Amino acid sequence: MNPLVAPDAGAHGGPASGLTALSVNLNKVALLRNTRHLGIPSVTVAATRVLEAGADGITVHPRPDERHIRHHDVHDLAALLRAWPQVEFNIEGNPLHNLMDFVRAVRPHQATFVPDTVGQFTSDHGWNLPADGEVLRPLIEECHALGVRVSLFMDPLPQAMAHARAVGADRVELYTEAWARAWGTPEQAAVGARYAEAARAALAAGLGVNAGHDLNRDNLAVFLREVPGVSEVSIGHALIADALELGYTETIRDYQRCIRRAHAPV
Ligand SMILES: CC(=O)[C@@H](O)[C@H](O)COP(=O)(O)O
Ligand SMILES: NCC(=O)COP(=O)(O)O
Image (cartoon, rainbow, N blue to C red; front, side):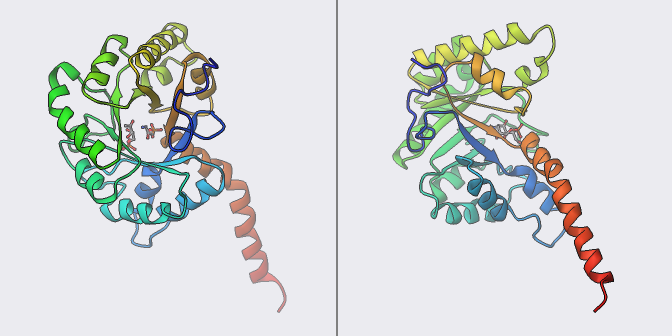
């Protein structure tokens, strides 16, 4: 088996190419928008642009404090994505807080359960299933009844993967901050091996494997080469930062054109 090809690749199981799907997290577009009352940058315009450019999915993490993605963004994106039937909509959040209301209202293709507290700075750990598994089980069943796939945000602990399957999860999302931190350090090989082992354990348990948090253009390719069967990566912070920085040249040229137009003889 090609280790880069996810076992369930196809519509919403990854792109038909069998490559790892790229789901773009738009939280940080909303964060910038929320600093004025002008509606720019627009989350739906960002979604349209990234999909036109070839992204496979859209991810949002509507936190209870609405610091970035707001209630209406989830509904606006759900409406937009009706015109993009091959595109996966992934909503992340804590199902014990606000996530299930969104799942019930818009029925995304995937719900990623994340054990964040209300007001948490950013996601920083996966589920502790011995403690939380039985609370999650009925919520996973409810998602399935609504036709929604469930992925559990998990630390790369091989021994936890069978438990994720046992409570009904379809996939796990491996929390990759440890990989991002180890990138380029002497720990990189050992940390990568830990993720590979966790992915193999997940695949062996019958789970699909997603990954995300602090993935970027430097650390992504080696991660996907070393960790088998990753169906999807969700990337936000670094990708939106790159989109800004890679866009400066064209943007400055356009503003200079405006200025030249203003000074041109009429
Ligand atoms: C689950 C996960 O890793 C992402 O939700 C990530 O935490 C983005 O959230 P913020 O954009 O709020 O940091
Ligand atoms: N699930 C991870 C995600 O959606 C984006 O995380 P990040 O790239 O913003 O760290």
